Image 1 (tube, protein in one colour):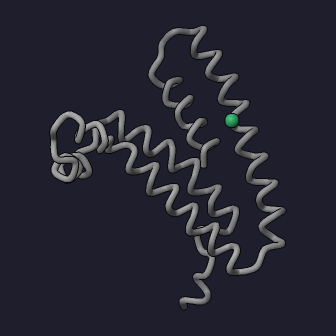
Image 2: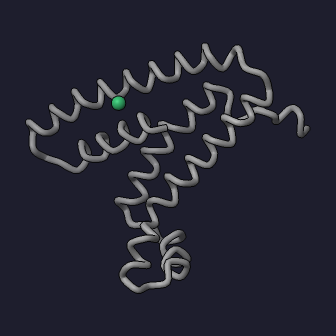
Length: 131
Ligand SMILES: [Fe+2]
């Protein structure tokens, strides 16, 4: 999750900047982060293959909660509260009206996290039990 966040954050910066040296540096950093993501997926896949259904379910719930926390961070509720605004009202407005930056970053983030979570079998863990 965190490596996917890093990859998305650097990818977002890469999209925003027009400075050639920074773009090149960010490309190197993104290559490195992509390796971290791949290593994490490969090593977790191997480890998860040896776990039971309850242990997979626990990791699935953790991944879900982490994804919810990542999504909620975009709403910066603590900042709105500190500024004296009602975070629930602000979120009610922001969720259906994301800024272009917010939408792009969120799309980049979850386009990294969702496929890797699926590769690890965490998206549909337990689905057969509920069918
Ligand atoms: Fe990393």
